[in-house]
Length: 193
Image (tube, rainbow, N blue to C red):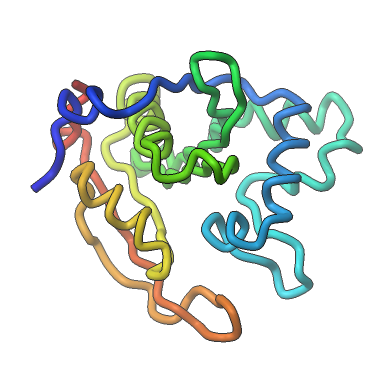
């Protein structure tokens, strides 16, 4: 059974999706030095750096204005900073848009570990889905979640995402390989509350 957004709103904290600022990227880079944060986001590259979608946080300090604009104003890859309503930066969300298909891959990171398991991921997912379906008019969104991230799997499932497939042994993690679970939601399945 999926949660109705009206039920979720009673318990989830309020968050805002904002344009990414340079100081936000510095915090993302710092959060990704934590192995548990990095592993639950996109893991690590074979050379050890944390994997990241859309840009390399450790390189942003050297970006020209043009590179910044190309990265953070890319119509095919929307990147947002997640803030609490009291102004604290707590994470990042992405929508990698495939316009010809009308779909987008979404990713949510709550980098401030002290805020894990307090509803901020759910609130960020809710706000990101609003952007995907309302602002961008997407037909479908999907997420690729490593099987070892059970909290994220449960969050997406309770939000109404459906299991669409399994990418076998696609995620290296702690010396082994794990499956990735592909979960999706259609626009007519989303209740914006």
